[in-house]
Image (cartoon, rainbow, N blue to C red; front, side, top):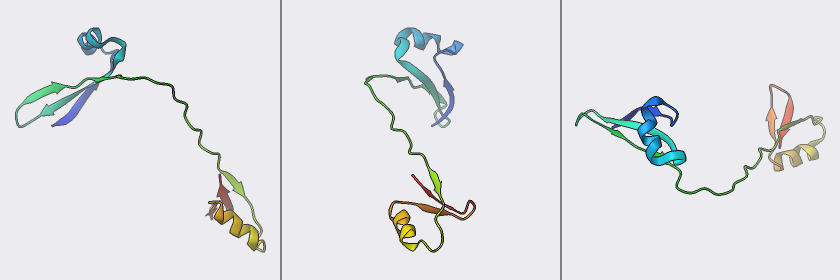
Length: 93
């Protein structure tokens, strides 16, 4: 079985599913079984909702450290910094 077609609730062919499941409906993927020559419609619905706040990705900044500043190089590496040879800076969050 493989998914060949997926409908969204606003598409014309999804009206009967939208009437049945309403605003809970997310999408309708159709799966095709080539051996049995059958098509099945799966329904993805929301069964639970709760509050959630995404964590922001930390900003990556370029840090220029002079070659002779070996102690600072060590500290940047310990903090998770990565050397970017293309930009010639240490990239760190």
